[in-house]
Structures are given as C-alpha cells and as structure tokens.
Image (cartoon, rainbow, N blue to C red):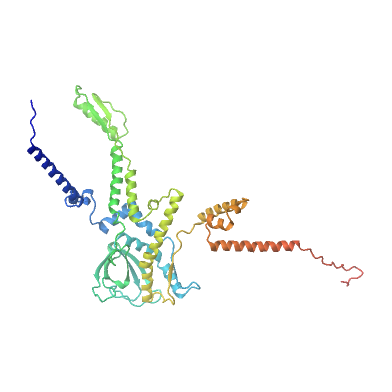
Length: 476
C-alpha cells in the first residue's frame, strides 16, 4: 500500500506550528527569568515550609531561648564573652580620683557587672532592653523626672525586657533633642501576687538597643535572622527522636496461612502473647498457622542535616562554629577561631557594651549627682581577651625555652640565622623587646667582666700584728 504523500501546504503548516511552539517556549523562558510568569512567584515558601512569618518576643524568641540549646547559645555566647572580664573606668592613671573611688563603690554595691550582663541578654533577645535606676531622690511617683540625689544615691538597678517594659509615649516635638525617643514606659514590677505596673519617666531608664538599622529605639532581635533554621533544628532533632523511637523497632508482620483453621480462643491467646512480647519481657510466642516476620528498621543518620543547619546559624550570627557548639578540634583551627572571635567581641564591647550601657549609665549618674563630676574625661579600659592563662603561659614558656636551648647549643646556628633575626622571625618578638633583651645581655656581660677582673687582681697581704705576750700585757 502506497504511503500518503505530504503536500507542500501541509509541510508549511507543520513548520508554522513548530515556529509558534519555539516562540512560545522562548517567551515562557524569558518570562520565567524575569519572574513575569513563574510557578515560584505564586508559592508562599514560609507557609509551605512551616516557618513563622512574624515571630514575636513572647511567642517565639523567648520560648526558643529557654528550650532550644542552639538558640540559647546564639544569645549567651557573645553576652558571656563580652562581660567575662571586668572593665575598668579610669580618670587618671597617676592616682585614684574621687570619681574612680565613687564608681568602684557603686560598681560593687549594686553588682553592676551582673546587672549589665542581664540587661545585655534581654536587649539582645528582643528589640530593646531597659534598665530601671532607683534614684533616691525622695519621689515615690516614678512618672516624674528624676531629681538631684546625693553621691551614691542609687538604691537599685533592675533590667527589663521589651515584654515587661512597654513604651507608651514618644517625644513628638521636632525641636526637641529627644525627638522620636521614648518619654514614658509601662513596667511590670513585683513578682507573684504582688505584680503590678508602673508608669516610669525616661530619665529613670537606660534604653539599650543592639543591631539597630534606621530606628534609635528598636533593634533587630538576635534570633530573627536564624529563627527559620532554629525551627528546622527542632524538626530535625525532634524528627530524629521520633524516627529512632518508631523506626529502630518497626514491629512484626504476621502472615496467616489461608488454609489454617484457627478458632476465636486461639486468636485471643495469640493476641495476648503478641502484646506481652511487645510490651513486656516475654520473648517467646506459640502461634498456630502464622508466619511471623520482623520488619526491617528504617533509621537515617541526622548528623548531616544538623551540620548544615549549624553552619547556617553560625554564618548568620558571625560566630565560629566551634565556639557556637562549645568545642574546638585542631590547634590551628581553634587558634584562628579564638582570634577572630576575640576581635568580634572587642568591637562589640566598645561599640555596644560601652556605648549603649556603661557610658549612658555613668553619664546619667553624673547628671543626677550620684557620681561626682570627673575633673578630666574618663575612659573605659577593657582587659585583653587574648591574654594567656597561667597554664597557657607555662606551656608557651616551656616551648620557648626548648627552642632557645636548641638554637644556643647549635654551633652554626648564628651563621645561618643571626640572633636578632632569631628573636623576630622565630620567637616573634618586636624591636622593643629585642632591644631590651640585648640591653640586659650587655649588662650581664659587663657585670661578668667586672667579676673576672676582680678575680685576676693580686691579693694584698695585710700585716699581721703580733699578739701581746704575758711579759708585756699592755703591749699592742
């Protein structure tokens, strides 16, 4: 049978259809790239993945901080490291001034390091934190501006979170220095049945904000950028627990022989035996006409999924992974992490802990008379985070001693590497340290040469006088 011939008109129609399809595909591709028509533009990823779109302090961040170890570490690690060492407020390095003495007394009496640390934690967890200062100005109505107090006239300091220190009023005067800042707070005071609220004037409060963008009042909660991954961690960890609970022993499969005849009493007995086998210590069953098979466990290792989430959380908060997880593996890696983390915390201490907490508190106390006015400007000295501990210094000293001994006992060492180069390149000393070492060596050499000269000088023999005899008792 002859095949039907395709006419030129039919070929032209087919070619036209292919051209139209190609054009449509090209337009769809371009539209997809430009997001004009794409299935993902109509897909709500947060809803599909079960993420919270607008997490709140009380409903999400606070419960996560209390129950999730990774979320807690995100808050605690930078706060604890920032306040691990006590900062010094210094006016004069020559002697202790009245301002320094008064500040030291206030610091110890009010336990300010502990209170500042708590305030830092609450402010980091939410959008802001508030420190209520109990000025002893004789006013019981805390909605009134603070008055003058005597030196040291602070009764207490209490940190509050955004959940317990709600801003009720803002300064709306565009000519005011405090334009846009809070003027009044509503604070929850007391505990238990004595809990109440008080209206507090801004002059009695230190408002603390971290990681703020445009607003001077509200910051970005520390958990906001990683909250999705924190919830994913709950899914993976919780799912892993449920998976091991259900999948480690998935159960038994009972296949009844279709030709077997089993009466109801036997079925009841087999059911009892099976339940005892599953729920008690019984490990034998007597079954009739039943083939028992154990289902294979379905368990997956969640380590890889957890590792990816930890990497994302560590990157989002700029915390080295080993520090976030509280473990260090490998000397080189831990040293690099420690140095980078120390630089991050040093910046945080100066820009945030000092700029948002310590200085505003000191300045407010000076304004109200609780601290004397310093004659000179004060500054805050933070201890070095990388200062070696006693054990580390002992280890370093032992290593340096062995290195120096090896260099000194090598006959040709100085011909290959001069002494000053050994100090700088191998031991890492700067020029001031090298000059000091050379000066001490020269001093010891001069003292040794002096001792040698004294030993080489001839001894002077002093005349020995004769002792008086019995005949000459008065002779000398």
